[in-house]
Image 1 (cartoon, rainbow, N blue to C red):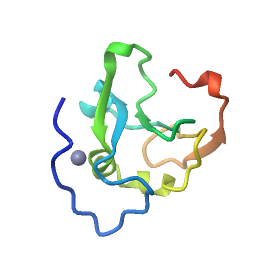
Image 2: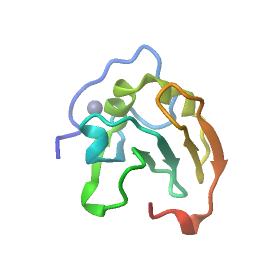
Image 3: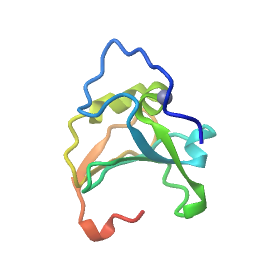
Image 4: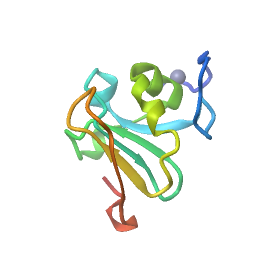
Length: 107
Ligand SMILES: [Zn+2]
């Protein structure tokens, strides 16, 4: 995968995590599908998912800055607690937040 050693310059970065923090996503998101499911998991890791695949082969790692740069609405989720997810039905739709059980974690 590409290195985390690159720079982002955001004028506004509300996340507790550093801009270059590694996050989990899917090949489909990296290829352009919208992010429709965001997990701030029980370990505190972020997952930015398209919701179209559960195949581990599609799992990718990307820096949070790259994810937010691709979709600035993600900053709305900066205060999502650990163990919560946010989903939406389409890009531009409202994010709906809810806590989820630890056992559901392996998405
Ligand atoms: Zn990046």
